[in-house]
Length: 182
Image 1 (tube, rainbow, N blue to C red):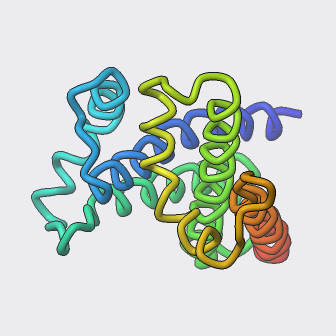
Image 2: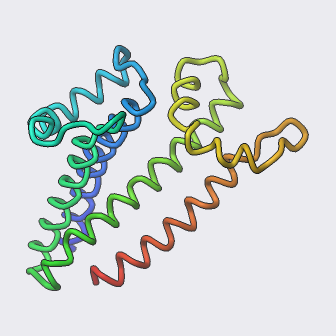
């Protein structure tokens, strides 16, 4: 029971910090202004980790590699602590791979949540600033599906197709991580 409690706390804390690092990466990639409440939150949560990393890991083109590295390091610490709580069972050499898969699972979950927020806001309040922010953040992922799927009765089915693909990817990642971790 102790392992499950520690796992839950670590999952929430690591998910918040690593997810915010990923959001910072995505906002910079999409050139979204940080002069808004969400941007200020992102800076407050991630600056302690990413500012030192930026001294070592420079950006590459429009890609903020320090944000990706920070998210990976947070997941690595999470799984290393879980490994220690579990009594060091299993191979410590697999921790980077398990952490990478955990990071990919976080990306899948966060992107799924973003698409769901976008869909709900499109029905409830499509004129809100939050809707335009969610639309800009999700557009690079929805665009390929929008090119392939025609509108059906004026309804964009690309979010459903993306969610379906994300759910399948999540299943594959969970299976992969289970095979390495347990």
